[in-house]
Each structure stands twice: as C-alpha cells, then as structure tokens.
Length: 197
Length: 197
Ligand SMILES: [Ca+2]
Image 1 (cartoon, rainbow over the protein chains, first blue to last red):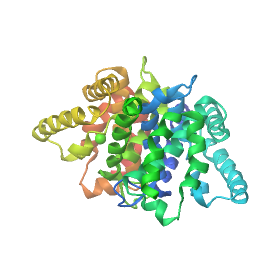
Image 2 (cartoon, each protein chain N blue to C red; image 1 turned 30 degrees about the horizontal axis):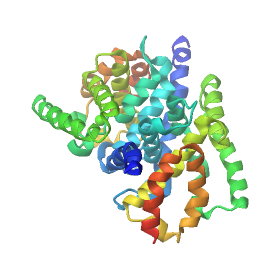
Image 3 (cartoon, each protein chain N blue to C red; image 1 turned 60 degrees about the vertical axis):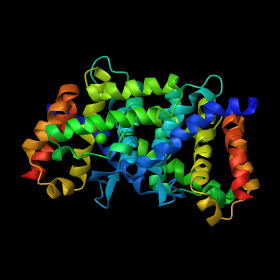
Image 4 (cartoon, rainbow over the protein chains, first blue to last red; image 1 turned 30 degrees about the vertical axis):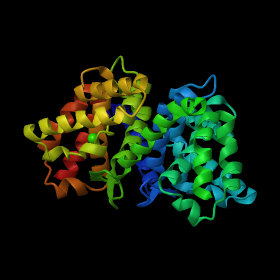
C-alpha cells in the first residue's frame, strides 16, 4: 500500500500525458509550409511555443515569455474532446456552443491531474481564452500569426480552399495581432496582399 | 530603407520559425499511443515539453523547469538536416557520425537567427547533448521516458517491430531515467516487464 501511495502522483500525471497524446490526431485547417498535408494541433502547439521563444522581443510590455510558453503548450488540449473549429467558419452561435464544449473538456482533462496542478493549468487556459492579460494577448497573437505564415509559405493553399479574403484576415487575424504585437502584422500584411492580389 | 531595417529582426526570426516547420516531416520509430501511425519529431517535442511541465516535481534538485522546457522545444531541430536515429539501432560508429551531422545542422539552423539569440539557443542544445547539468539530465530522462510510455499504451508495437528486449531498454533508457528521476523508472519498469514477458 505504501508503494502504491508513493506512485500515486506519478500515475495521475502519467495518465494525463498519455491522454494528451490524442492531440496529435486532431487535424487543423492549415497545412505544413510544404503544403504536403494538414497540420495537427500537437505539432502546431510546439510550433507556437517555438514562436514565443523566438519572437519574445516583440511581446507587449509586461509579458513573461516562459508563462506564454506554458500557456501555448496547454492552449489546444481541449480540442481532444471538442475538436478544432476553423477560424473562418465560425459564427457567434457556433462560438457559444464551442465555448461550452471546451469548458467541459478543460474540466475533464485538467481534472486528471492532482488538483494542485490541474487547477493552475485550468486557470492558465481560461486566461488564454479571455485574452485580456499581456501574456494571453501575446499568446493569442501568435496563435493568429502562425497560420498566415504557413499560408504564405505554401502559396495560400488553405486560404484558397476556403475562399478567404484579405478583409476576412484583417478582421479575424490582423486585429488580434496588431493589438499585441504590431511589428508582426507589419511583417506579413504586404505578403498577404501580394498573395491574394 | 529605414522600414526594411526595422523589419530585419522580424524577417530573420520569421525565416527561422518557417524553416523549423520541417521538423513536422521527420518521422520517429515510436508510434502514437493508439498505434495508428509513427510520431513525428515536432509533435514529440511538444509532448516532451508537456511532460516537463507536468512532471517537474520529480526533477532533480536544482532543475529550472522553464529552462528544461526551452531545451526540449529546441532539442530535435537538428533532425531537420540530420534525421532521427532510432535509439536501438545506434552503434558507437553511427553515433560519432551523427554527432558531426547534428553539430553542422545546429550551426546552420541557429545561424538563421540574430547571433544574440542563435548563440544561446545553440549553447542550450549543446548542453542538452552533453547531459551533464541537472536541467539537461532531466530533459534527457524525459526524452527516454516518453517512448516507453508510448509503447506501453500501444501494447509494445514499435518494440516488437525492432525485437527490443528488457535488457536493451534497461541499458539505453533505464540508466538515463534512473540517474535523473528514479520515480519515473519505478513507474514504468513493472509495466515493461509485463509487456515483454
Ligand atoms: Ca530525439
């Protein structure tokens, strides 16, 4: 019994990381830069964490890079239960339904961990979703910045497939990026214009 | 010209993260937990960073979790040029050749960044490879711990395919895990015994 008790914290955490593996099977609307296949949400999460590590200099005042990285590592886990909702297909109705599904998913997934870790992870995910703190705004901006980068590299393959226009990108993506990190928007805006001309 | 100069730091970093996308096309010898396909090195890197975030309590004295996470986000980038070398197929000769290839890859990839970032990233990767500091030992231990976790979940599919024995796992994996974080080895050792019995 002593032995089982000692292993308890490892067992719960091992169950959590094993369950997290399923994020590798969630497919996104964006392709790899070579256009060869759609990206999954696990490799996307790695890519965003690398973006945060690389582009921290362009983060808003008061941003803590290591906290942004933790946020981005966790931000898509809810998709294991709720799936990925392609940005350009969302409406206020689908967004409200999705928010409910994602909250239930967060409760289940972070609930696999001892509460001392599960609760802070859950709170960090909620902070990301609310997009109000500097850390969350920067994390959201990177989450909006990476897909256009993939599209620019792959000659706009997933934008063309979804009939995406410059105005749609400016409203749903540009606004969020500019609010946190204008230099990144300045970098891609002319490339988007050229690509969709 | 002023405009181009201002954009310079973004452009170099954007090139680096775009190049990093290619890690999503590097296939490993380990499968997903559901056995459906082989894992790639980008999603594997995300998974390891999540392991570090989750299992930090079992890290050796003096480990800094956010530094371990940075190390793990970068640790496999060299595979973009050098490929992944399956652990159980390595010999001293292939390892020496691989170390050379990986060092050249690190110089090229981290060289895409402004030197103020590229040099510290390169040094962090070298620290990981040397596996001497507490951070690097813990990062290496997680890199050895995750594949058995995938094998245990998928009923040993990639071990069976490569005729891997308990002794091989104990030598190449167990030793590295035990040195940094014995509780993790204690958690999987009985499961490995059962699986390979
Ligand atoms: Ca590796």
